[in-house]
Length: 114
Length: 117
Image (tube, rainbow over all chains, first blue to last red; front, side, top):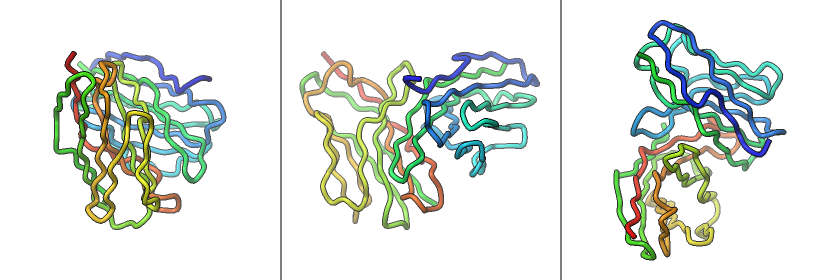
């Protein structure tokens, strides 16, 4: 596609519910990143995929967070048993995967946990 | 661990004037990348400019230029001839050179730029 797309753009969940956030990267981009952006803060790294392999998940805040990219294209970030502190904008970025590549960001999903 | 610091939470500039946004960072690496991203209210993060640490020449993209001082670990963004469309949150970001510890971007806390007509 022309850019990184994310869905839904907005998600409201009740505390304890599970949510799934989708990212569709730019076609042909090997690398995919998830970031979490709290209100008034800069994005913070969650996890990184190269094709279908999850090479770095050091930023996932708890075992309630899970990400997958089974076919090396679309990725899903799943949050189980959501908590109020999970409220944030979740940004997805993709890059070609080369040595000097630039990350291109999607519009984000704003998650609000009530 | 690498860190990025933006000490100006908010800045304001008159249309057509010049403004400089500050950024400092800390790393023990000698090779790395630095970026400025713009995030308008729509939330889409847009790359403004990038700098490779091994290049001595400061990067320039039209009205946007950087002042990269490697020894001081400083990376400021200058916006010339400011336009109303430049109003946004600006983030400074760091990334290890390929082969380094990680491919992730490390962001500062951002500077909110207002452009006055």
